[in-house]
Length: 540
Image (cartoon, rainbow, N blue to C red; front, top):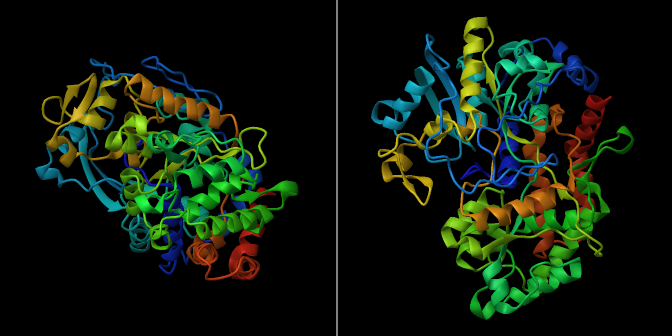
């Protein structure tokens, strides 16, 4: 089930940068630097990832694909069976957990029946501390600096001194999860291989991922408005795409094509064949910011703004989350870039028949452009070092329990709670009550089963599945995924602000397009070149 309120690609980048913003907190100043030499491509290539052993409890209506498309379901199993004979934490007593959430923070344990049922299912008292996604990296670093570590923690990526932090403070999970050993935890082994790549450090496995589908942000379209004006919803080249933007824009009706500068630049980069974040040709890592295609994309957005195709408040809305969704839902914009889970958010808000997503064409035509792949995971979850084998294995089994897929009673319980209290059945789907929605403890941000499409009506799920299958056949990976750059962890916020500000300055005419060349010199000297070198070193 796709996350309902997950952050977009922009939010992921911001979260990583916030980790860098908090780098002033000393982490492991007394720690040996030896792990840095262990965290190399050669060492990590020898790490045995968990065997991928797919589990299908309920056959999907639309199958997933090896390329990364999610399976689709039209209905939810009404009477799922228990997957666990005994609770995973039976005999443990209490477990402390901290992780970031992108959902509303629920009432505390004593006043929360949903939470109490979660404890009962897990077999222990779950002492959970939640922090909003943007605040979490700083909170995590404060915990490390103070030595007050919980049993289970979300691990922000990137974190300064990441390989050293992993080795010194958190359990090496390789002995339990490498290769066939993962079969002891069948629902962890059900997580696709791509999702595990970010969990490796110092030549072993240190974390359990929060799996997500590989396709990154779609460019959503208001299909109803496009039909209304008689425009072409499937442009086959950039010129046809630009014509679509012109056709749907009508300032007299307070309607514009787009409001998101950063998102539009990304989709144009795809059309132009710009590498996904980094190009590692010949072992040298070169940022996509330095690509001529990126500069060309900025010039294209600048021209769009001049032609009045962007919402008048785009300069301020681009850096925010809520306004972009509000503009799209209200029809004030016809396009917006967002996480794939937003398809369900928009569909439920304005009607699924009004929402579709673009398959980016190649700039000059001739087929579909390569779409940027994500990391395969939204985040990492680690287990505190020194708990002993018995408790470490119990905590791994708890994470295994959190990954039980659709078709199990455990999945229904952790997603929806207790029937008649937290949810009722409506049109074949478990639907939260007001109490259930208020008390939900959204544990998907610890870990979860691999995401799926639906369950939902056939037409809606089929439309999304068709897009995912087509996009997945043309994914282009970011070669830096799973690699560590200390400069990125410490200066990521500063470097991101340089490129973010420059894109807006150029798009809205505050600076000429030639300004980008000066910005790139600044970006490189401020840490970009060092980051490139560190990624290359980690790949050697």
